[in-house]
Length: 292
Image (cartoon, rainbow, N blue to C red; front, side):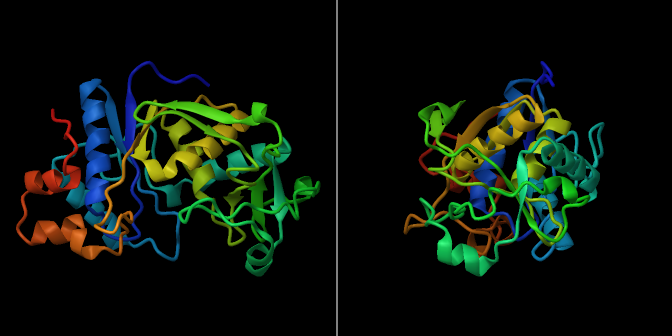
């Protein structure tokens, strides 16, 4: 698969809470990069988490982004040629990718419990990342016997990380060259959950490819996810887009903002009377804000 010559970017919020000023900064940058390149901007509703996703948050994210002055030409509210633009409606796409990975020997069934993983897995390298899977089920070869993914976790069988030649490298357009060694920096990651929900890594890869995304703009907390997703793209023989990872907005203690920080949500600040320009000035702080 080859990427289109025209620029296609995307906004991909999850309706698991109200968007905050960190989202405002990242999504503003994504929108301005699309404008500067005369490209297309897509909005995708990443609502795969059945426990946390809420319709009211989906409505709020559309309203709040529009209030900020961000505009898109494809999305769940306006349609487009590459829909549906809501992940919970795209199961058939994810199942097709799962079958391709299963048939190619790239994934394996994992029956480890959370307790097993807590006892055996090594600690993650940072607080925002998952523990490195210890490999207990890695040797399984019975993937072909599963007609459907439900009932077990499915993990991507990555390189062991013993050879530097297996390092995943990519040139981030904002942060420069990035290097991650599978097996050392991250382990065999989930592509499908036992509760029959596609994992984030698989869904994002499938959707970005199907929607012909040429550049992914998102927060720097997802740098390691980019390395995982490049491995998935190689396995599925999908073209790799360019990446632009933004610095995160952090609280006074240095922690990244979370959706539970309602006081810094776009909705709260908007309802307090703050105009869009003032909110964006707060979001960018001392960083220069790109303008149209």
